[in-house]
Length: 546
Image 1: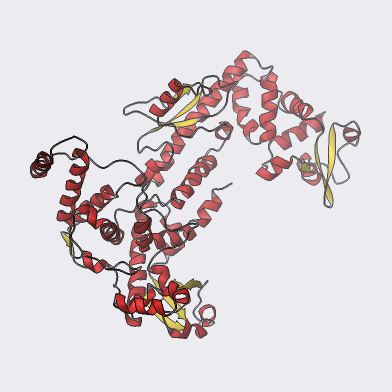
Image 2 (image 1 turned 60 degrees about the vertical axis):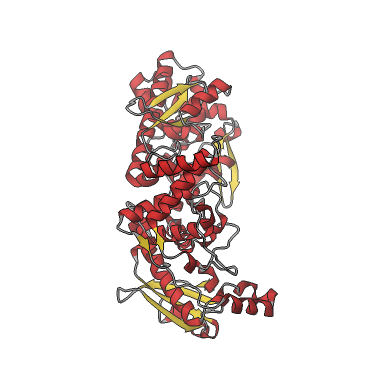
């Protein structure tokens, strides 16, 4: 019985991965013997196997040991390994964390609770309340300390304090949900009927901002909650990044890109009389110079028209009302909604930030523009539509202009990436390899030494401490790893940085929850920031996935 008791304590304190817990094949006999501190010639008594208390299962050269009946295992653990029924309330409280380390401990505790004393039941309730409060405090603090700028992107979508909702009956029921606390509230724990999905129950949860309900609160009851706090937060962060829900409002580059691309694709909705001829490639030159205050004025006019068009006003009256509102600078209703909504609120925000930074107007595009006429591009395309389709945008750049575009693109990318990381991830920035090694030296290995063809590129931390670009023939790519010391080469075409096309992951959204396909495709720097960020964060996601 002493051996069984010791084995019970060992398996209860063992850290199972999800696959081992699923297969439930027990522990390696050598691990058990080591933990039991047996001498070399000692072994687990064979009687325990012949009497079907323990069983063996093959595991390559050794074998695993587990209990034949889970109920016997649970009884051994609670009655002999821990003697739960003999513990005082404080002693019982102090060992409860042990029982939430793995699935076996949870099973043993559930078995005990069926016959536990009322004092131990109250103790378990208090333990769950205390651990839930500890969790939500840690969860809220971690978001505030590390992701303050976009805390509202995480469940439960608030930049304020977060509370935790628990079932009314913490013994019979399970689960939890995070909710938005009201201003000046100090009550971080609330209770609800988790089985009430009636209209009244739904309305109550909706008021609290609850959109996600977790089926179990067991993961919160472990001794060290730091791991589960980070795991839950990084799971959400990965989805936030995949959906492109972050924007760095400290980056002039990203703000100017956003303003230019949104204005270009929606200029008619803002009453600009601009005639733009293009051929699969935006001709951004036509929208410059951009007067930022005039642009805001046009957005306000659009807002007012949208607001008054459903008021059944006479056209003349409506125009007079709009002009008066613009002149008197009254509060103008913002454009709300999601999906197919014009992205003018985002455009207004970007222009406002740029104005506050001292910009009155933007005179020219942030990247070099096409310098080959549309007619010549069309002639090139018509020569061989099938083969030239992938070059239809590239054909609008001369080789000299293309090299200038590549150089300026990556120069702006580094500026934008640095700002983006410092804005969104200030406490993690030094763990991002691309960020930590800025500025870089880039090497492009192109077929026939022609930037207008296909090739590859790589980069390294600049040995001279300044941004540099090198263009080489693809035949020289062997030197990339030998003499230059690049870690990898990626395939490259000028088209990759003229627009974004990747049905699986890219383009990312430019404006959260709005459908702006063309805008997304041509916010090229924003998309490449996400591409590099995705690589830089692989290690963090892996570390916090267990």
